[in-house]
Structure formats: C-alpha cells, structure tokens
Image (cartoon, rainbow, N blue to C red; front, side, top):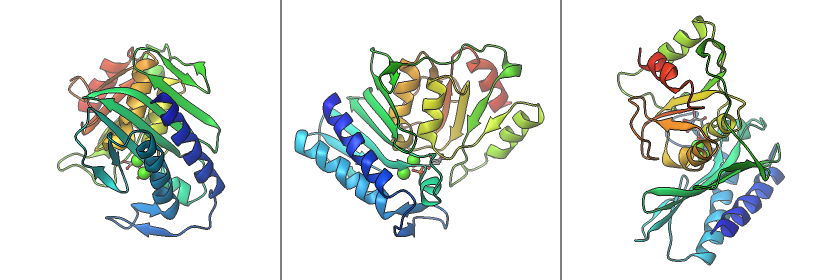
Length: 253
Ligand code: IPD
Ligand code: CA
Ligand code: CA
C-alpha cells in the first residue's frame, strides 16, 4: 500500500508540475472564488486509477469526484491539488495529499509539493519524513515567541468569526501567516517551520495525510476543545505539543 501511495502521488506530482502556469481551464464550484482547474480533475483521475488497479476492493474519497461506495476496511482520502487558488495563479504553494485509513485509523499519509520538490510522508508508528529524512516538530515552548499559520475557509461557520482570532493574535504581536494550503500548513508544522496551525471547516481530504504527518513528527492534533482528533472534525488545531494549550486558550478566548 505504501508503494501504491508513493507511485500515485509521484505520478500526480509530475502531472501538476507539467501543467503549472497553464494554460488550463478553470471553473467555479459553489462560490465565485472556490476554483477547480482541469488539472485538479486529471490529477484525481490519475491517482484513483492507480489505486483502483492495485486495490479494486478499497474505498476512495476524493474532493472532485466524491466517494466510491465500497464497503471496505480501507479508505483512500485524496486532495488532488490542495491550494488550488494558488495553483491557478502560478503560486507554488500547493500540493497533492493522499491519506489511507484502516477502519477509522490513519495508517499512511503523503503530501507532495512538486514545485518545491518536497515529499512529506508518514506511516503510523514509524515517524515522519521529508524527502526520506526524518522530521520533528519545533521545540519552542514560549508562547510569546511562536510563529503560526492559519487558513480561512471558503464558508465561515455560523456564529464564528475566524478574523477575530486572527486579529487577537496579530495585535498581540504574534506573526501569523496564511499560505492557502492546509495540507502544507500541517506539514510545515511537522517539520518545525511553524509552531502551530488552526483552521475551521476543513474537509477530510485537506487534513487526512497532514494530520498523521504532524502526529508522527511528535506534534499534537485536536479540536478546539482538546478532544482527540478525527479527519471528520470541523475544528483543527495542530501544534508542536508544547504550545498546544496556550494556543487553544487564545483561540477560544
Ligand atoms: C483549501 C486550502 C486552503 C484552506 C481551504 C481549503 P483547496 O483547499 O487547503 O488553505 O484555507 O479551507 O478548502 O480548495 O485548495 O483544495
Ligand atoms: Ca484542499
Ligand atoms: Ca483541492
């Protein structure tokens, strides 16, 4: 399964790299700026066909083509391009994300940004790597010195305002970035570039792989109430572990 995962993500990586900067057709999903390119769709078809050839009896959930209803202990969760709005504008902060779940446990995850040639990978219980070298979350424990990343969903959850949290952090002097790819945000926490990440309303395909990569790099992932995390959650908080509680408090304040 690891071999199939890596084959699929590398082939899809070559495809999205080849078409980076276009030309390609762009259409809109729900909402004017929720884009999908023909490369997103081709990438998902390619990944799905590689998985189907190897494991015809496994379930697959992809962002662009939905769920293939097969009763199986194994589910592959695919984001064929995470950071599509960046991709559509020639900004190389985007990637492919593929996670594999056995029952309800994530067992394999890979996130690949071919534009930067960075392949993040994790296997449950075996650690996380970036281009085959082991990675670890940062060591920082002083909340005043943290470096954070967040994202804003296409649709704001009812009664929540992600900007008030953002404003609170920034006005207290904490540097916060917004890259536009949740899967990369998670991986950049996993390799210690950022100390923490939060976002509302992500989907399973945005987080499936990155969540395992953070945990296997020694980090912590929960919802905003500190509950154990599942990929179906609508609140994502991922940190190096040491700043988890102060960041959680700052989010719910
Ligand atoms: C989006 C990105 C973005 C996040 C959005 C996601 P897409 O995924 O991960 O960073 O803020 O919530 O939907 O649409 O580029 O696959
Ligand atoms: Ca996504
Ligand atoms: Ca996507």
